[in-house]
Image (cartoon, rainbow, N blue to C red; front, top):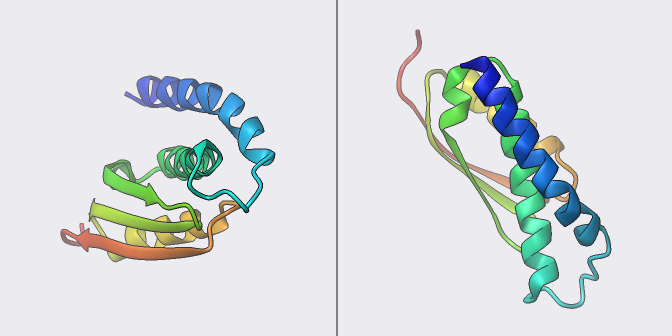
Length: 110
């Protein structure tokens, strides 16, 4: 299972690298075009990859939505409040993230 997760992360990151190089050229003057979409998807991909790299399996169930201004919304279910806090901390460290909105539901401590 870990091998499948790692392979998925590597494939996702590999596909996102061309997008990341394009997003680096992003001019903030045109937020409605393809540049904004690429930047948003790169941020989302980076957050998901970092969440998947963390050990708790509940972090794999976190949904990540990013808008053009770097606002990130985390939703879904996690096992513990510590997992929710870790997901917010991971998302906050990604370059380009302006604010993280936590809409994670804690299903119960184990």
